[in-house]
Image 1: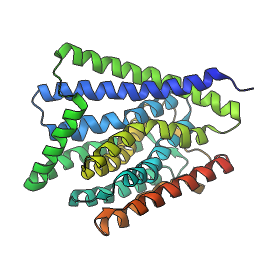
Image 2: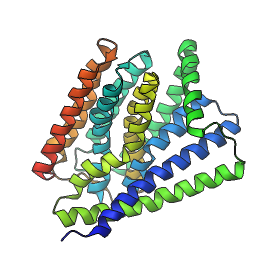
Image 3: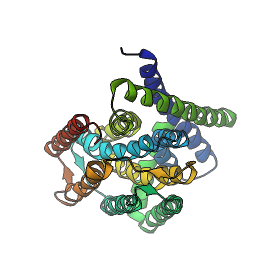
Length: 329
């Protein structure tokens, strides 16, 4: 018999993660802007964090509860969905023009951090020093991106303009009192924490109710739910002809998911994160394959066409079908 409470917990948890991330982004962006921090840095850090905050909240919550399977599956599933589903759907709405050479550089970096993450999982557990290594890599990524942006005047100018528009979109152009923004951040963080708790409990119960593994729930439903911010932002950016924001959001989210989400989760988890059984036989290779597929997409032709977007979506549907048929094996 289907019980509605676990399903409600799962949906409510996803909703709270998304709303909480929105509050954190809005409040933190306004605080940073009021403090005189450039919109380029705000867009690079605060907005990037905001779109990946649901993954962070969900994975941390799962790890703290001892559910390594759900924690790692959420990260891997989200990275697969970002490329195959979100990039594909964004291209269907509007062909994506690749303008910046920095986009091509970030593709290489995304592939590199994916390989590093896979290397850390070879022993079927992720060591804590691996989490520290990933987090230090995040700091290096932010600093390097900032320096590169400033060292390329033309790119910096264009990215500054794009970031200003993005931050203005996030903040709605409003200027509420500082206290209101601080409260928004605090409430948003609280919703992330509580939403993560609901999400993990609901996902685990739903998995048990339907007889599927936590890995399948993490790779599919939770991964899709936590990728909703990236989906909405990328589609809107593409429709507004801000293709670089759309691409940068997807690539940045995948890099952030590995360096920050996986890094922090591995560091604070009460026990070592255990790689789910069967992850090496399919999902990690799909994540790497999706990352490698970005090379021809971004380096050839200078545009991601609707046909290529349709192909990516088709591959995602095939992958989802395989996951459900095999039941996480």
